[in-house]
Length: 235
Image 1 (cartoon, rainbow, N blue to C red):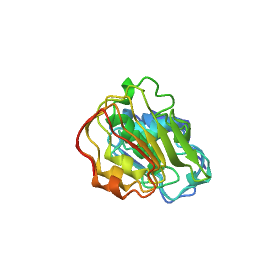
Image 2: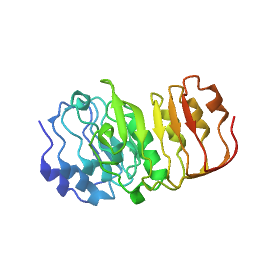
Image 3: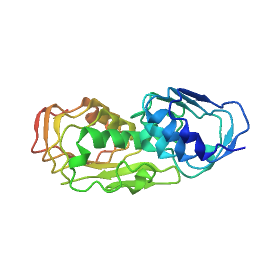
Image 4: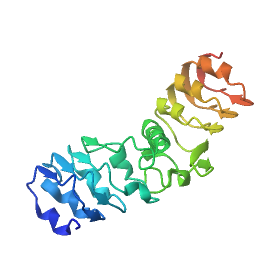
């Protein structure tokens, strides 16, 4: 059978474990009301036959372990809610490492947004949308059926804060342009891992310290612009 929407009436519940059954259909959004959204410690629905979209509300079960492995969510074209994948409110999500439901490149871009104060950007269209493809986020370009990020262009877009180390997880990226912003701190060493980079523009920011040695090993790099920062050493 299915889980009825009335399940949300269990407002003082601490554990709901329906794993290892033959339940099917979509998860009702009312699951987010379990335990009043705050007292539920465990939602166990693994090893069933659930399909469809994982509701955003499930990611708002504060402090809960959300266990959904061994269902059929991967058969849809929709990813899991971003906040659930990042475990922003839940204690644990057992599919957080599933690259289909929680694409690692989406996680990396989310960290970029947070570290560079994305809420203050001039234009952050679709960034951190729970379901929208990260390939449709402002300034992001993907190629091929695998949705690999090949270009990020956020020039003159009000970025500040710092540049997240997770930029090194965008390993397919060929072009990165974060020029004309106010990003501070050092350029992360992880940037030197981006061996496919052809075009790197970080000019007109407030970067400090030494540029990563890995930049010197980027054989395909054709354009490097770091001027108008406070960088003390370039390899």
